[in-house]
Amino acid sequence: MSTLAPHRLRFGVLSTARIGWTSVCPAIHASRNAELGAIASRDLGQAGDFAKEALIPRHYGSYDELLQDPEIDAVYIPLPNSLHLEWAIKAAERKKHVLCEKPLALTVGECLEMQAAADKSDVRLMEAFMYRFHHRTQRLLDMARGGVVGDLRMIRSAFTFRLTRPDNIRLRADLGGGALMDVGCYCVDISRRLAGTLPVEAQAWSTQGSSGVDTQFAGSLRFENGLVAQFDCALDIERREFVEVVGVDGTLVASEAFVSGPGGVEIVERHGRGPETRHAIAGEDPYQRMVEHFADAVLTGEPVRYGVADAAGTMAIIEALKRSAAAGGRPMPVEDQVQ
Ligand SMILES: NC(=O)c1ccc[n+]([C@@H]2O[C@H](COP(=O)([O-])OP(=O)(O)OC[C@H]3O[C@@H](n4cnc5c(N)ncnc54)[C@H](OP(=O)(O)O)[C@@H]3O)[C@@H](O)[C@H]2O)c1
Image (cartoon, rainbow, N blue to C red):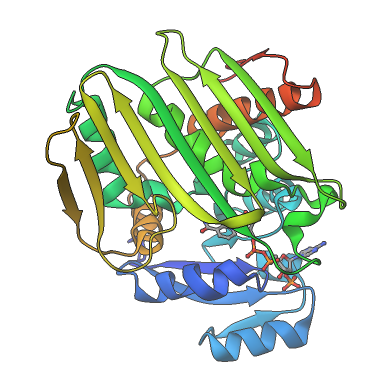
């Protein structure tokens, strides 16, 4: 029997989630180094329908059954946020590598538990935060850190959209829903990445919807060097998506900053009243780039680019923001529990 590593990572998908259907399964199909081996649903018929439509060879009526499939190397987990912990750990225990949707878990403690399970079984674990894999994100980081607009003073960002279905998982507190967890996490993640460090303090206000989750959330982060990041997110406001980086010499603005479509995008650079420069970035599929990176890491034994420190750092900020909102906006320290 050959001991050579297979050339393609064989994925199993835990659930018939919408994001798997629209974005990640097509990305796995299109990838150069991964393929879809099986899908599982709590409903066998639904798994069968999905498998047929998405051209997946095997399907199962429970997630457990898929984890027992020896022809599956890795799982992609697009379950409601509150179920990421349980299924990432079960998958790791079955020696499956884990690509798990954002936010990785509900708390820093859960992120660390998941990583401990992955380490114990010697499998890779990565948060499926696809926007990090878009070239535009890297270009924005390079420009901001490279001094294009001088010393950074402010970061402003927003991610809002209007949810129309009342039965959506984002409106369920017991499933880890809410605006901050669903879309605010993008604003928090890009802010700390641009700052290059974790903030020391967080302050926030939230509006609770009738289902018990935050439907609107606004927060501020203070970094040790005086940099401030402000953001807002919502599940009941028309779609808005942007990041603005403010330096002493100018600004950089990325619109559609997180979920850009397949077309080209741009970063707009402005200095005072001078002419603006529009930096064009070619269209690409960040989901495919994410899948290919993850598969490369598994197949070559290299570490994943975004490990638990990335997920847990962002989650530490989210936890501090939640504490502040619960205390009516009192500033709360951000506790770095990883580095
Ligand atoms: N990266 C991105 O661009 C992106 C975009 C959207 C969402 N997400 C993330 O992906 C995850 C899923 O989001 P989604 O909008 O795709 O979810 P969704 O369409 O509601 O799907 C969630 C799936 O989880 C399964 N499930 C298991 N227990 C459940 C329960 N108690 N209630 C409801 N569903 C349950 C269901 O599959 P079965 O019935 O087949 O078992 C369901 O189809 C979340 O973590 C979200 O944050 C990421």
